[in-house]
Structure formats: structure tokens, C-alpha cells
Length: 468
Ligand SMILES: [Zn+2]
Image (cartoon, rainbow, N blue to C red; front, side):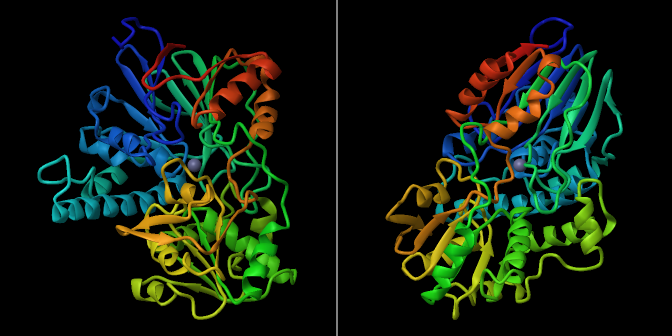
């Protein structure tokens, strides 16, 4: 019997409601429980603390987990769920599995280091401080992965069938068609854009009637600029004044997309052929999987990319330097000559990029280029909003460097793209749940869905239940 007290299929929103992190959606009917995505909460402290709350149902009572993609806010809670007793299968695509391993191992390392740091400094609500999960939990989690082909309907639990379709967001990413006790649902996951340089555009909206669509709305209240000239201009002006460009970038996908764009700009003679440093061990591991997927022409890779680049490297613009060790990374904290540095994390919340920021922010000749979504409460967001100083390693660092924001690398559909993608099926959808957006974005999409598509739309609140 589920929480509504009836043997009717229900959905409960256990995250990404009014925020962009913690995607976790529980489908229940009778004794069957399937969780779609299992993300970690990130950003503001009040959100991060939610990772420590009890999971709303017994983790061992969940039959299966289905993952849309490998980003931490969609898979980062999984080892915690396993640690708390979930022992069932995790259905995902081949490259979501490979990237999730890279991302979860990195996350376990950060959790463990944070706990050790809290122990040393004596601040923690746990005594002694504990990690949300560690490497052994990740090892157990990986054994539960069930790599699943695109386009093929797979049974994952009683009367529950899923089909993965390429979403054009990151390697392996999918939107998922779910049949749950006779109800047809579609989870967009994170929906990509038609112009990803490596990945196929999001697949067409599937045929047939849908009882509900659960859509993201990250950029639902804005429109991306068409490919602008800003990026090369920002690079050239910085290099002309003897400075370097620092790009905080998500290790997975964003680094790959930026490297491809830099190679194109150098080939076209639009920017100078300066050294380019890829400084994130996680990004370099992900890069290897992108190269592998191109070589194998995995279904989510664009045909033209697979044909042109099979056996060649689309990521090296000429002077690509891959920095693996900490010492190599430290050597460019204050770059000795004009160069371009791509380093994680993407919102400057941690990782090697923080050390580079500390070295480069006080110097007006350098430029920090923000290329991705910057969640509320992160250093990246503070820089974007014009902070004159930012706190790093317990110290205030003055911001004298130029700060630029470039939209062309976004891997989320904007409001118009979302409406177009869903709009083709507007007569076949009963209801739309709008999730995965900060305040303003969810409401904007709800309004557009109702005004333009004439479909009932709801922005669920945290933990809210609905009968399907
Ligand atoms: Zn994502």
C-alpha cells in the first residue's frame, strides 16, 4: 500500500522541486516502488543538509532505480541510497554508467575529505564527522548497474517498462519513456539543445498518448543567444593585454564542448594558438570516454562527428596540455604566459579551479569566463553577480580580473526550445509537471505550457504526491 492509501499509481517529488538539484522522483503502486533519478542536493547549505535527512521510504523497499544521466544532481545520492539498504538494479545507458563511475568516485573522495577536514577543525553536526558515503559504497553501487540500450523497451519492475532516448545533454544522457501500471510517462531528464557539437539533437517526442510529462525548466525563463562573437573577442582582448583566460567548467561534457570550440576557433584563425590546459583529472577521464564513444559511434554521437573524427582527436587544438598531477596544476596558478585554462568545478565550489581563481582574480589582466549554469549560493554565482571580493580558503580575495559570461555553451534547452520540443505532442499529453528550475523558471514554464500548449501544468512542491 503506498502513501495515498490506494493501489493507484502515484508520483512523489523528492527533490528538484523549486530548485535545480536533488532530482528524485518516486513512482509507487501497491508494493512496487521505482525511483527515477537519484540526485544529490547541491548549492545552498539548507539544500545540502537535505542529503542527510532520512530517505522518505525504506531504501530496501525500492525495486529499481532508473537514471537519466550521470550529472551529480541526478545520480550523486545513489551510493547513499545503497549505503542505507537499496540493493536493487540501477538501469542506465552504457556511457551514463561509465561517466557515473568517474563522477561518484570523485564525489566519494570529496565527501571523505570534507569529513576529515571537519574532524580536524572540530565543526560537524556528526560526532565524529562522517561522510555521506565513501569509495566502498561506490564500489557496491557500481555492481548494481544494468547498462541498457537506447530505443529498446526494458522491464525494470512489476508492470514497469522504460525506454531510453538520446537527450543531447551529455554523453549517455537520455530522456526516458516510462510505462507504469498502464500509465505512460515521459521524464525529460536534462534536455539538451539542437546544436551540441558532438551529440545528436534530442530525439523526437515519442508517439502515442502520455498521462504525464515531467519536464526540466533550468533555463525556462530565458533564451540563449545565438552563437555569439563574444567568446573569441573575450579571449583575444585578454591575450592581447598579456593575460590568461580561466574557464571554470563542469568536468563532464562542458570541458569537451569548449575544447572542440577552441579547436575550431584556432583552425579558423579567429584566436591565437596559445597553450590550452585541461586541468581536472575527472575531466580527462571523461574525455577518454568521449573519444571512445566517437570511435565506436555510440547512438548519441552525431553521425558527422563519428565519420569525420573516428580514430582522430577532435579535442586537441594544437597545444593541448592535460594536467593530471597537483604539482602540474600548481605550476599554472599564476600562468607564466598567456594561455587558456579549463578547470573544474564548474561553479567554482571546489576543485583545482579555486586555486587558479585565488592566483588570477586579483590581477586585472586576466579574465574569468563563466560558461555554465551558476546555482544560487556558489562562488560562480557571486562572480556572475559582480562580487568585489570572494571568500576562498577562509580568506577574502579581491576581484580585479575581468568576469565574462558566455551562454553559447549551455547544454540545457531554453524556454523556446522546450516549448517547441514538447509542443509537437501537445494534443497527446494530459498533464505536465514542471521541475528542475529555480524560482521564476518553473513558474515561467508552467505559464507558457498553459498559455501556449493549453495543457494543465503544475510546479510540484518538495515531497508532494500526485495520483497519476
Ligand atoms: Zn545534467
